[in-house]
Length: 343
Ligand code: UD1
Image 1 (cartoon, rainbow, N blue to C red):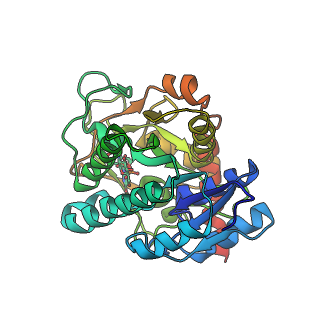
Image 2 (cartoon, rainbow, N blue to C red):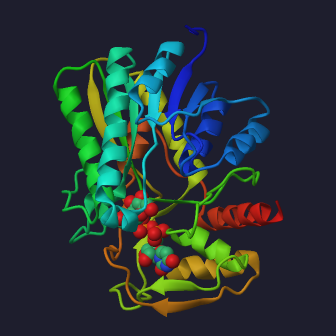
Image 3 (cartoon, rainbow, N blue to C red):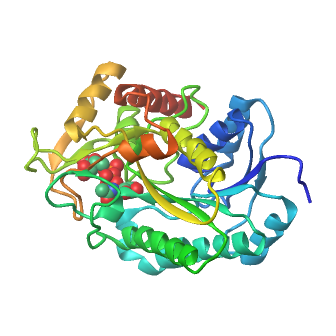
């Protein structure tokens, strides 16, 4: 077994948030070990990471649904912690294929947890989501103790259930320290342009839809709804630069590593600022100098009118706050899209 280095298991490490986190871990002296089966990513991301950090990254092409394969990896490294990203994340698809989501998202988490306990790895960060709040009534700023609503989709249910599973395992007395990071809307790309979001097929999320439309890959962006009760009538979200989000994992690992005994904490990871769909479009047009082809369409089923994070706890508990602006994120996303098209 290799014990000399600070190995951190990163499931889904070739994905959008995973790849940026791997870069930040390396830049902070840790040695990430990526486990990814590329079902929703590409080996291009590994090449991009390697270009940025200037060295090889450790990775295993294994499905986390394969418990035996996962166990072999745990046996090979002495992990100091686990960051568990690997999951399916398309809200709409989860409505039509719920079993896929329950099986992959919950089965994968359970396999990782069983291995963590078996191999005594006690630091665990879980990729949760603001989707666990459902459609919040009253205030649109949510804190970690804002009561959760019925999830809007099976995807949302897997995130609520994932947090619950972790809480129950800690309550059972298992030697485990858990940090649930509830991500708001990650956008942007690494400023080098070497890694970014790589949607397979037609994107579901706003920013890749915007950049692919501007690049001529897609014809037109539809803005879902114009009659919401918001200043410009379009939905409001808390868009966070993916590199800021990646850094929250480094801060989270440092914090969790300093805890003694068992613990389970929840932290919102956002900027605390809300931005509408139209504001995103206008920012994109300003920074790219391109006119975007877009039109208003019907509301998208299941969309929340507005939600953004109260980020006080992140600052106090894990000493992290977002640094980059939304404009920064849009510039980096556009730069990445152009690099992709030039390849
Ligand atoms: C949702 C979940 C989030 C989850 C993410 C995964 C909520 C509140 N958020 O994000 O937790 O991690 O999915 O994919 O449940 N839009 C358009 N046109 C488009 C695409 C999007 O107008 O073509 C609008 C949407 O209506 C929304 C905003 O852009 O107002 C952001 O949408 P999207 O990027 O899909 O993210 P969420 O739905 O907020």
